[in-house]
Image 1 (cartoon, rainbow, N blue to C red):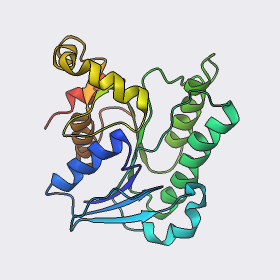
Image 2 (cartoon, rainbow, N blue to C red):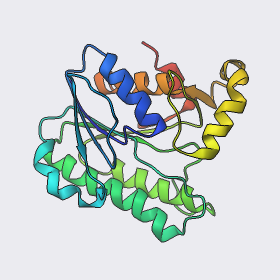
Image 3 (cartoon, one colour):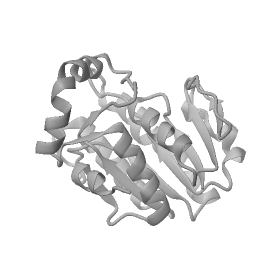
Length: 220
């Protein structure tokens, strides 16, 4: 399986990259991001693209991939709606539209978030924009699957790039295991998200939108 990965330096992307490199069914990973991962592996090739909206300059690289894991994202905290839309909706579709044309048999897995507003009419700005993004992806002519994790425990030394989440993870460290057991509908791990994505890429998804409970149920 040939994997195209966007956002490998973020918390979720780090987890996905780790599982891809460990999985014997993955033969190649092309990582696209604003910065390098700093990892060296025979399976891994990287393209650093500081302005991701200029994706078109590297489009010829993207034929022949089986799956795209799209893990790019930013916090909406302090952002105006137009700015958040630019780095959420516009950027995602700038990547997804040409990929759907180049690889119509591809599975495209998009990391969204719990609480996303599929109606596109709610009061929460980030939830509306995420909902618009999800809906646009599901209309494209490839197999789009939406992951909506809630709380994610970072494992294997993985750290969030968001300072607030890093602090939260440190303070929550003794509680993660009981929280996962008590609230499987709310809490997962970076490892489980990565493994669930690979399972969906190989076997398909039971439905197009997967919440945390669905993600945790996708065990090997």
